[in-house]
Length: 304
Length: 266
Image (cartoon, rainbow over all chains, first blue to last red; front, side, top):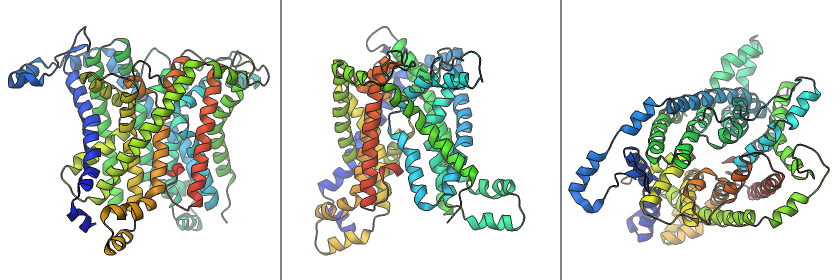
């Protein structure tokens, strides 16, 4: 490779510069534009915002541009309860459904890790396979099941558990079901990865010394799988906050999640600056758990 | 031989049932003769036949497939380049920014990726349509490609490349003859993932699309927003069948060639 680097061919440079340029053009630049528009004023125009940065205007233009920036949109976010409520709602939904995912995913991951090796591979494949089909389709499948005269209510009525068919759709319960269903592989896989490495001799040692099984689990298994728990929790929590399809198709319209609010501001109210400001705040909201995750990953790397 | 306890067996069975039953219900309902989705009217393939006459839906499907082919291919090329740069180029200038831009889209909510790209296209006064969605999907998918190819490159036995170059092979030839075949399974898996991501995406496509470029998920979404429809059960069943078959075939291929990092494990 040293020789290759010395040769420093055009091709070599291209390998770095092409993806670099692509990401600057289509990831960094767009985000800077969002940042800029979030500081602009709403206008009834196409595009519906001012000021537009005009490079041709030079230094003078830059000064006008900076003077024209306004933090009104951010003030709006603080003052209008709909934004605050949808942030709070997103965090609540994400936190509770992540807890549900952990409670549902842990026994599955644990059980898979305890099966014979050959079976493990098959079970992991079976867990991941549904993830390959479109999320839209998987959520739509639940619309079939949860509808008022759908199979879930048929079963509940047949068992005599309910007298009247309850409405599942357009409730938070439906959102939780949809989220747990969609994100289960993201929880099971990291948990499985750590539980599979767990040294069973530790469990045997605890049993030999007369430790009851629940206590072994609490004192040995759980602490040793903490890195998997953290990875699974963040892998679910972060994307759930920005979720759009699940709350839109399964949830009600009374209190939207933050992804829906951005969508609505953009497509419904055509308020691009407000949508951009909501987006910027959301990104900063997500940076915190990501930094925690990075630190955790670094610590695990350092330990291994 | 380890014994599987009753509790563990129950956890696995309930978990698998929970993952597959909804899809099974969807598939069964797609063969329901009744127009009322929840009322069973006997087995029938009438909804599949009706799909063939649904011109807008077929157009959307063809756009989606072309879109997925285009964006998966470009994303695989760019993503593989990015992975090579990250693993092989050591500490180059701007590495931190580069790495951040590669990983950030992985956790960026789709709503924000879509919104920001749309604002870019508007600022550039670009006509929105097939190509803007293709660019958006490429950007989203290339980061996944990079992560997959990168994990394969990290395990790579460098002495093979060194041997080739010691024997006088120029860098490009070494790459083509030694490196590329060895990392090919990862590249193929990454391409498949990119293809699936593009085929499945609703949110980013909704933001970046324009007239005449309605993708299949956008079409399905607008149909199912207001409730279940038997035709949609049929479309979704077809998509599940296609994706399921592709993943199983890819996993088997990977198993036969004995490589790690099959699509099922990414």
